[in-house]
Image (cartoon, rainbow, N blue to C red; front, side, top):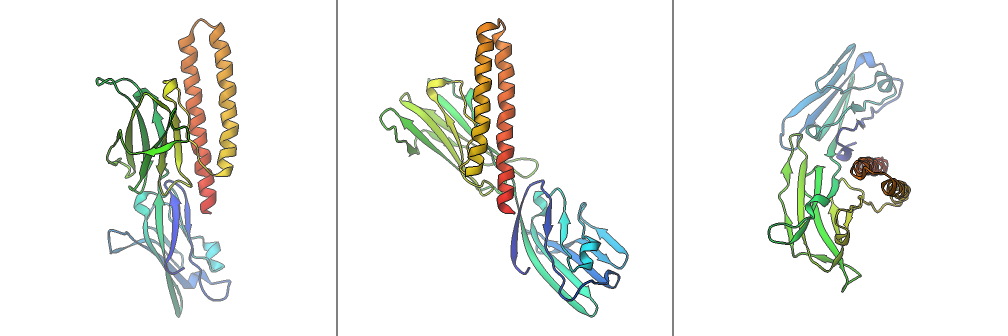
Length: 287
């Protein structure tokens, strides 16, 4: 296990491997296991878990080594609810008298970037221009890339642009994750604009589309993996059916504002479901 890297998403559980050499079953009463963690910014080691004889102690809440697994030569460390502070180099030290062995694993913690286009920002400001805001939130590590693409009547093939864009700094949240925003000034001839977010936590680029000709409309995030696109396609069909039902209700019901509010709430729930699907597919790819 020497020098291996392992990646886990924020708040997930993780098992860091450590195999005990020699024949099994082992007499765990006559052996010891100690796990240490060394943070990237701190060269000193800190105990995470120790076990010898009938003694077990977790220095990090939720840390454990399975006694049943240890009898079979598996001294892997289990951590529940991983946080950003859990990242670092882990060292497993196993003593089976008179033998001693050790190994290291570097654990990297990622926070999944959430991508959003804010339609309420696509309104006229004092200068008469119109803007759209793209936001990446809750991501870690800090490095992230946000770009814009537009499609115009003169260029229906689309192009990446660099003008009319204002990128904000990465703002650190209380939990250690980051948020970042990017504003795009809309030109009158833009048919479609697309915000593209790239981050190490994303299995592929996160893309959000906006249609200036339909101010007030918003399309959810899309991911490029085949499985996700299929899933999002089914969910998108559900959104379409929901909109049809809402349209029928609006044409026949007197309280349109109430119906529109209800529709927005349902659409927000669908968007959250799409995000959950993408996260689950990413976890499957890591495993």
